[in-house]
Amino acid sequence: MVFASIPLVYPLATKFLEDEKAEGESYLEEIKIYLSLFAGEAVGFTMIGLSRPDMLTLQAQVAGISGMATQPVSFMSIFMNNMMVFFGILAVSAVIGSAGAFILVWNASVLGKFFASLLSRLDGIEVLTGSSQAATPIAYIPHATLEMTGFILAGISGSMISAAVYREHFDWETWDHLVKLVLIGFACILAGALLETA
Image (tube, rainbow, N blue to C red):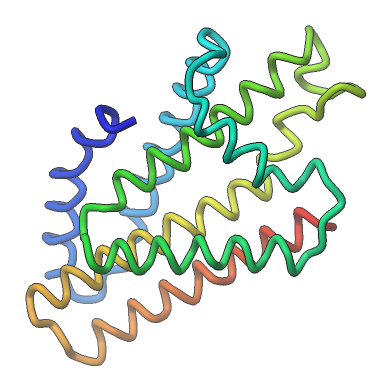
């Protein structure tokens, strides 16, 4: 996981520092970059999980604990858990601007291992329909996408806060954009939890 993260640290940090200087930045490009990287990493870790089931044992433990969609849990339980992760990512990224790369890869590895565990119990058309043994991974994509978008926005917000402080940009416009970005991330987490328990 570390080797997958290291190549992303410098280009992502440089990108954030460059874009933080731009006024009126919507951060849409950063969101697209993070989502694209996350999707690619998740597919890669899913392939690793399928080909080497003995690997990613820590991710398997985390996925087993946090895979709440397979258990009857409350909205508040899922929402509070995801908000703890959200603010954790925000804080770490604000302190260590390049932490987003590690967070991105870690979340992708957990999701990839979880999807691999589901796919290993499904055969043929069951990959699309699911079975009594396991649900199809497709069922998790809608709320997982919202949750991961929220986590990614937390990472972007934290990284941009770090860049703004580094450049001593304390004007209202800069921080107004950052607060809005955090609120959008919060809304994604809320929507994901609602969808997961619907």
